[in-house]
Amino acid sequence: MGKSLLVRGARQLLTLRGPSGPRRGTALRDLAIIESGAMLVEDGVVSSIGPARRVENLAAARRAEELDASGCVVMPGFVDSHTHLVHGPPRLADYEARIEGKTYQEIAANGGGIASTLRAVRRFTARWLERQAAADLARMAACGTTTVEAKSGYAQDLAGELKSLRLLSDLDGRPLDIVPTFLGAHVTPPEFQGNPESYIDFLIRKALPEVARRKLARFADVYCDEGAFTYAQALRYLLGAGRLGLPARIHGAQFEDLGAVRLALETRAYSLDHLEALNPRDIDALARSSIIATLLPGSVLHLGLTRYAPARALIDAGAAVALATDFNPGTSPTWNMQMVLSLACSQMRMTPAEAICAATVNGACALGLDGRTGSLEAGKQADFLVLNVSDYREIPYYFGANHVRDTVKRGVPLARGKELTLS
Image (cartoon, rainbow, N blue to C red; front, top):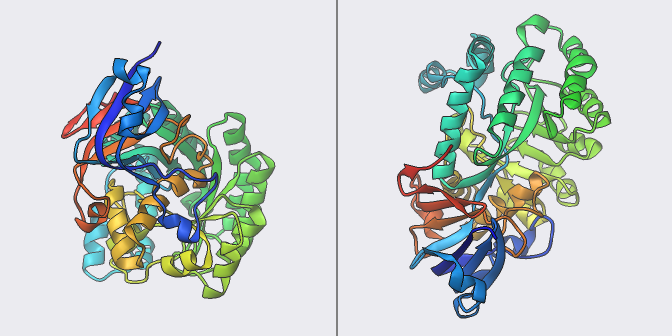
């Protein structure tokens, strides 16, 4: 028999239990809180959860190791459903240039931006990139993330993209769950400069089949926006990926809306991410779909912009909204989903409950993992946090803070206070 763990004493136990699928509308505010609750974990899975008096009296609970959460909030671990984990050094020169008034597009035109990261990822060894990604995963875990989506897309040649995807495969389960995405169509690389159509041909004929054959990615992603790929180019790439069994994810409407919702509908995308420039006329169509609108306020903050995604309009229309960090070296260098919650509340007028739901169960839905994680229910993975707050609203209220006392993955503590025990 495996190890058992009894979590007891929680002031608020946020279960987020509910029907399958993403939460929408008023359901996004229902955290299914148990006051003075307890949870029993067996073999890494939640076996029982409910009022303390019931759970603590179970025979298995009396034999379990105890995790004292007295006075704390216990909640599901964050599901960060949009990151660029393998990236090389931070883009510090870009950061200074923006402070001096240069735009994202101007920096890219001068050889910075994604192009500078592309050169780095091609140049650095797999071992160096693995150390960088592992360190970032440790920081994410310390801030409460237990499942992460991670994209390639910073090499834009076949050898470099395969190197990045193999690295993600090697890091999966050490100890966070990593969902790999092939972001082949990120930008047009130097070898195809001025000829993006030929680059899309290369991706469809060579890169996508190789990624699919090696089973290195769960999804394919595209950047459809100003300075990246057009609607027609993105559609051709995603349809090619779909024929190989790689479902779509989309970066869209970050700076310009080139038909992001139409593209997502035509390709049956799991998620449509960014949406700061979303056409208001498309909100109802998105709300009627199964697509998860993944909002990334960290990138807006770091770029020094003021136009955030229309979270309030999306939620009120009935869209399924998720939140993620967009962790990357140029436009959103944050590991902390708690900070993302703060931005969602203060800048996008989401309630704390909506933000928590969007960062857990809806993030899991965006990855097709809601049957496994994102909420604390019997039969799901015991991926949870113990936070040094007495009310869940304190999590976004104290912006920039890390409230995590314990990060627990499949019933095993990963981060306890300042001490990390990551492999």
